[in-house]
Image (cartoon, rainbow, N blue to C red; front, side, top):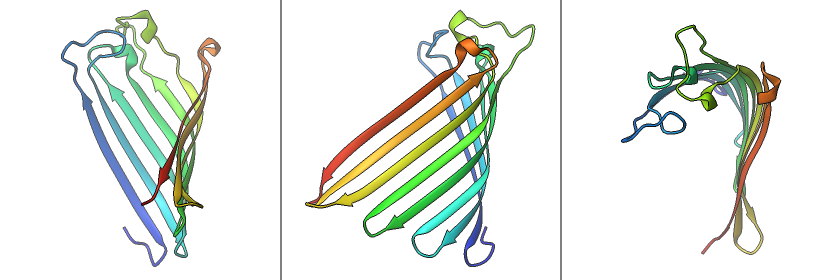
Length: 166
Protein backbone atom coordinates (compact mmCIF):
# COMPACT_ATOMS: atom_id res chain seq x y z
CA UNK A 1 0.00 0.00 0.00
CA UNK A 2 1.62 3.27 -1.14
CA UNK A 3 1.48 6.06 1.43
CA UNK A 4 3.01 8.80 -0.68
CA UNK A 5 6.07 8.96 -2.88
CA UNK A 6 8.55 7.33 -0.46
CA UNK A 7 6.47 5.43 2.14
CA UNK A 8 4.94 1.96 1.80
CA UNK A 9 2.96 -0.25 4.19
CA UNK A 10 3.63 -3.93 3.46
CA UNK A 11 1.99 -7.09 4.74
CA UNK A 12 3.58 -10.53 4.26
CA UNK A 13 1.87 -13.80 5.09
CA UNK A 14 3.37 -17.25 4.57
CA UNK A 15 2.37 -20.77 5.48
CA UNK A 16 4.48 -23.92 5.39
CA UNK A 17 3.25 -27.48 5.82
CA UNK A 18 5.69 -30.29 6.62
CA UNK A 19 4.67 -33.93 6.25
CA UNK A 20 7.07 -36.87 6.49
CA UNK A 21 6.63 -40.34 5.08
CA UNK A 22 7.90 -41.80 8.36
CA UNK A 23 7.60 -39.19 11.14
CA UNK A 24 9.56 -39.65 14.33
CA UNK A 25 9.42 -37.91 17.68
CA UNK A 26 12.71 -36.00 17.52
CA UNK A 27 13.41 -34.38 14.15
CA UNK A 28 10.98 -35.43 11.48
CA UNK A 29 7.56 -34.78 12.98
CA UNK A 30 4.65 -33.33 10.97
CA UNK A 31 3.95 -29.65 11.64
CA UNK A 32 2.54 -26.40 10.26
CA UNK A 33 4.39 -23.07 10.36
CA UNK A 34 2.72 -19.70 9.79
CA UNK A 35 4.50 -16.33 9.40
CA UNK A 36 3.05 -12.82 9.27
CA UNK A 37 4.86 -9.50 9.06
CA UNK A 38 3.70 -5.91 8.79
CA UNK A 39 6.25 -3.25 7.93
CA UNK A 40 6.36 0.45 7.29
CA UNK A 41 9.03 1.04 4.63
CA UNK A 42 10.67 4.26 3.51
CA UNK A 43 12.72 4.58 0.35
CA UNK A 44 15.42 7.24 0.63
CA UNK A 45 16.54 8.20 -2.83
CA UNK A 46 17.32 5.49 -5.36
CA UNK A 47 19.68 3.39 -3.22
CA UNK A 48 18.57 3.31 0.44
CA UNK A 49 15.48 1.84 2.11
CA UNK A 50 14.53 1.20 5.73
CA UNK A 51 11.57 -0.68 7.19
CA UNK A 52 10.29 -1.35 10.69
CA UNK A 53 7.47 -3.46 12.06
CA UNK A 54 6.25 -6.52 13.96
CA UNK A 55 6.71 -10.15 12.89
CA UNK A 56 4.71 -13.16 14.12
CA UNK A 57 5.42 -16.87 13.76
CA UNK A 58 3.46 -19.88 15.01
CA UNK A 59 4.28 -23.58 14.89
CA UNK A 60 1.46 -26.07 15.43
CA UNK A 61 1.60 -29.85 15.48
CA UNK A 62 -0.48 -32.75 16.74
CA UNK A 63 2.51 -35.10 16.59
CA UNK A 64 4.42 -33.56 19.52
CA UNK A 65 2.48 -30.83 21.37
CA UNK A 66 5.54 -29.69 23.39
CA UNK A 67 7.00 -28.33 20.14
CA UNK A 68 4.15 -25.81 19.67
CA UNK A 69 5.17 -22.17 19.99
CA UNK A 70 4.22 -18.58 19.22
CA UNK A 71 6.88 -16.00 18.45
CA UNK A 72 6.54 -12.22 18.27
CA UNK A 73 9.36 -9.87 17.38
CA UNK A 74 10.19 -6.38 16.26
CA UNK A 75 12.24 -6.11 13.08
CA UNK A 76 14.24 -3.36 11.39
CA UNK A 77 15.38 -3.84 7.80
CA UNK A 78 18.09 -1.63 6.26
CA UNK A 79 18.82 -2.06 2.56
CA UNK A 80 21.16 -0.48 0.03
CA UNK A 81 21.15 -1.30 -3.68
CA UNK A 82 23.44 0.38 -6.20
CA UNK A 83 25.31 -0.54 -9.38
CA UNK A 84 28.06 -2.33 -7.42
CA UNK A 85 26.09 -4.27 -4.86
CA UNK A 86 23.14 -5.14 -2.70
CA UNK A 87 23.37 -5.02 1.10
CA UNK A 88 20.64 -5.90 3.59
CA UNK A 89 20.99 -5.86 7.39
CA UNK A 90 18.08 -7.00 9.58
CA UNK A 91 18.26 -6.83 13.39
CA UNK A 92 15.34 -8.34 15.34
CA UNK A 93 14.38 -8.89 18.98
CA UNK A 94 11.48 -10.85 20.37
CA UNK A 95 9.97 -13.61 22.48
CA UNK A 96 9.24 -17.27 21.66
CA UNK A 97 6.71 -18.84 24.00
CA UNK A 98 6.27 -22.60 24.04
CA UNK A 99 2.80 -23.96 24.74
CA UNK A 100 2.39 -25.63 28.13
CA UNK A 101 -0.52 -27.53 29.63
CA UNK A 102 -1.09 -30.55 31.83
CA UNK A 103 -2.04 -32.61 28.76
CA UNK A 104 0.92 -31.35 26.75
CA UNK A 105 3.45 -34.11 27.36
CA UNK A 106 6.29 -34.43 24.90
CA UNK A 107 6.93 -37.65 23.00
CA UNK A 108 10.69 -37.16 23.51
CA UNK A 109 12.64 -35.61 26.34
CA UNK A 110 14.76 -33.68 23.80
CA UNK A 111 11.65 -31.78 22.70
CA UNK A 112 11.16 -30.06 26.08
CA UNK A 113 11.82 -26.35 25.60
CA UNK A 114 11.67 -23.31 27.82
CA UNK A 115 10.37 -20.03 26.42
CA UNK A 116 12.98 -17.41 25.64
CA UNK A 117 13.83 -13.88 24.57
CA UNK A 118 16.02 -13.60 21.50
CA UNK A 119 18.15 -11.09 19.67
CA UNK A 120 19.02 -11.79 16.05
CA UNK A 121 20.97 -10.19 13.23
CA UNK A 122 20.81 -11.22 9.57
CA UNK A 123 23.10 -9.98 6.81
CA UNK A 124 22.94 -10.40 3.05
CA UNK A 125 25.61 -8.79 0.87
CA UNK A 126 26.33 -9.19 -2.83
CA UNK A 127 29.20 -6.90 -3.80
CA UNK A 128 31.25 -6.42 -6.97
CA UNK A 129 35.01 -6.42 -6.40
CA UNK A 130 37.91 -5.92 -8.86
CA UNK A 131 38.88 -8.51 -11.51
CA UNK A 132 35.27 -9.24 -12.48
CA UNK A 133 34.52 -10.96 -9.18
CA UNK A 134 31.49 -10.77 -6.92
CA UNK A 135 31.38 -11.75 -3.27
CA UNK A 136 28.13 -12.91 -1.70
CA UNK A 137 27.81 -13.26 2.07
CA UNK A 138 24.85 -14.68 4.01
CA UNK A 139 25.06 -14.57 7.80
CA UNK A 140 22.61 -15.13 10.68
CA UNK A 141 23.47 -14.67 14.34
CA UNK A 142 21.13 -15.33 17.26
CA UNK A 143 21.35 -15.02 21.04
CA UNK A 144 18.70 -16.81 23.14
CA UNK A 145 18.05 -16.11 26.84
CA UNK A 146 15.78 -18.92 28.12
CA UNK A 147 13.61 -19.08 31.22
CA UNK A 148 15.71 -22.16 31.98
CA UNK A 149 19.28 -20.75 31.82
CA UNK A 150 20.71 -24.19 31.02
CA UNK A 151 19.10 -23.83 27.55
CA UNK A 152 20.65 -20.43 26.75
CA UNK A 153 22.35 -20.47 23.37
CA UNK A 154 24.23 -18.49 20.75
CA UNK A 155 24.49 -19.36 17.09
CA UNK A 156 26.20 -18.03 14.01
CA UNK A 157 25.61 -19.40 10.52
CA UNK A 158 27.38 -17.92 7.52
CA UNK A 159 28.41 -18.63 3.96
CA UNK A 160 30.71 -16.79 1.57
CA UNK A 161 30.60 -17.27 -2.20
CA UNK A 162 33.12 -15.84 -4.65
CA UNK A 163 31.81 -15.64 -8.21
CA UNK A 164 33.55 -14.81 -11.46
CA UNK A 165 31.56 -12.78 -13.97
CA UNK A 166 31.95 -13.71 -17.65
